[in-house]
Length: 230
Image 1 (cartoon, rainbow, N blue to C red):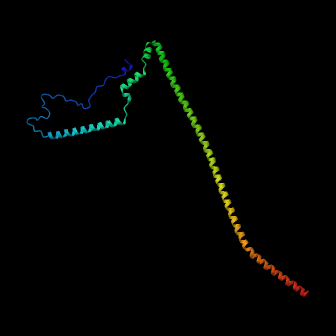
Image 2: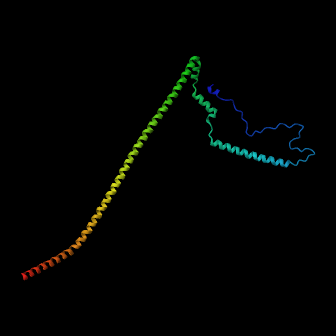
Image 3: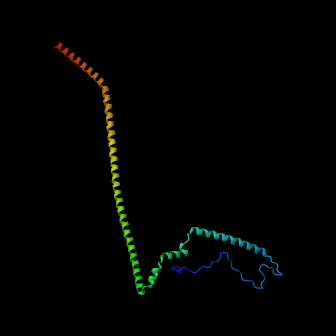
């Protein structure tokens, strides 16, 4: 006989859901239900019958609603597996070693107490060791998080520097473009001025030639006058 047999509870008594309480037997002195009393005309029988029919219909409707609600609740909430006695029995039979229990039972009571105390202390130390491991893992996680935050801050600083350099380079490029545009405008203006001068050179040459001829004629006339009056 396994140890799990002691875990089983007393068998439950199945009570059918459709069972109805039986009415106590009527006494011999009272007339049967529904039988007319001599000398009394019953005018409420149809009303009572209609009331019974309504109660029966309402009872059937409420029963259907209760069944529907029960089915919905059974679908929404999963069944607790620990309510299955057969499952609990199989788990206990699979986890308990009867030989170990018998050996512990045959041991000296004092030794059994000391062994239990040692096992309790061992479990306590294991719990403390697990807590320490959890705390160490938490500290490592905090350090890793701080390291990650430091790296993120460093990358943000580098990103800000790169953005500043890009802005400075863009400004320098824009300044170079403006200087280039100014030089091109100056060259175009100079070219226009040179073209105008080239167009004016023949006119200026002809005008200068005419002035030179006139001056030569005037100087020749002056020499002639000097010769005459000399």
